[in-house]
Image (cartoon, rainbow, N blue to C red; front, side):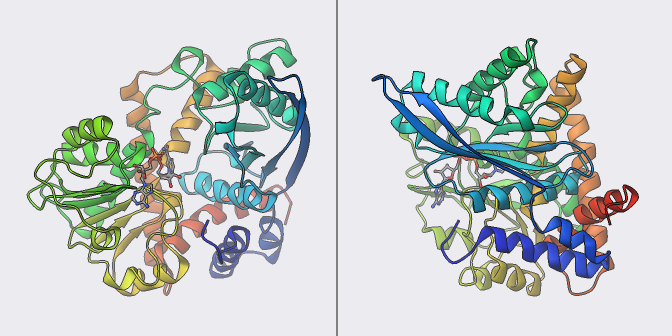
Length: 416
Ligand code: NAD
C-alpha cells in the first residue's frame, strides 16, 4: 500500500459511505467496521542449522453472517495486523458483490520466504496452519494463496490439517494443485471474470468489443490472460507493459506472441514492431478499455485527469486512489472496480471448495459457464445500484450491493 493511505481506515470509510447511502440500521456499520475475530499466533520453527526461530502470524475473520470466512494467506516481511484486518474486510465485500456465501478472511506471516530453504518453508507453513487450526476449517474459514504463497504451500497446509483431524480435509483451503482437489479453470479465472464483466459493461454502454482498443498495465497472470481472452473476442490490444517497460503498437499486438517473448526475455519491452512508453503515457493512451493489472495506487489524482479510456476495468487490487475515483466518475468513464472486476478468482475458489465438499469435479467448460452467470449477475446488480442512486461511483455501488446482502442477513439473524 502507498504511504499515507491507511488501508484499514480506507475500508472503514467505504463502509460508512455505503451504509449511509443505503440507509441501513446504524448497527450495520458498528458491526462491519472491524473484523469479528482476530487471532495472533507466535509459533516456533526449527531451522536447518538446528536453531529455533519464532514467527508471528495473524488470521482475521471479518464477518460470518452469510457463511464461513474466505481469503488468502500472505507470507511477507511487511505483514501487519492492520493490513490483515483491512484485507479481510475487502474480502467480505468482494465475496458479497458476487454473492458467494462467504465472509472475508485474511492471514499473514511476518517472514521473507525467499530467505528460507524449501524445508524451512514447509515447516513454517505446517506450523502456521497448526497454530490457527482452532479457527479454520471447511465450515469455518477457508484460506487460499496470496502474496508469496502458492499451490505447494496450500498442499502442505491441507496435508498438515488433515493429519491433525485424522482424515483428508481438501475443503480446508483453495488454490490447491489439481491432483489434490484443485479446480479446473482456476488459472485463468480472474482474467476470465474480468472479461465477462467487460462484456456486460460494453453491452450496457453500447460499446462494440470487436475492434475495441485495449491497454493493459502489467503482464503477469491477470494481465496476460486478459489480453489473450479479449483478443479472442476481437479486441485490439494496442499496449501492454511490465515493471521493465512496455510494448505499444497502434496496429495491435498478438498477446500469445508477447507472452512467449516475455517468457524468453523476462519483459515485454523490445517486442518486435513495438515502441516503449512510460507508465504514465501507457495509462493515458487513447483507447476504449484500460486494464490496470499490476500494482495498487497506479491511477492517482495526477494521472486520472489525463486518462482517455472509455472504460476502466480493475484487474489489480486497489489500482485507483480515492481522489482519482472522483475524477474518473466526473469524466463519465465506465469504471469497473476491483471488488467486482477481479472477483472471478474468488468465485472459482468457491467452486473449488464446493467440488471438494461434494468430492465431484467439474470440467473446465462447466466452471466457465457457472462463472459467467455469477459475474454477469454481479455486474447487473452493481450497475443497477449505480443507476438508482445519485452522486455515487461504481465503487460505492459495488460496496452497497455487498453491504445490502450482509445487512439483510444480519437483520434476519437478529444481530442488528
Ligand atoms: P503477477 O505477479 O503474475 O503479475 C504482475 C505484473 O505486473 C508483472 O508482469 C509485473 O512485471 C508487472 N508490474 C510490476 N510492477 C509494475 C509497474 N510498476 N508497472 C507496470 N507493471 C508492473 O500478479 P497477478 O497475479 O497477475 O496480479 C496482478 C494484480 O491482480 C494484483 O493487484 C493482484 O492482487 C490482482 N489480482 C490477481 C488475482 C489472480 O488470481 N492472479 C486475483 C485477484 C486480483
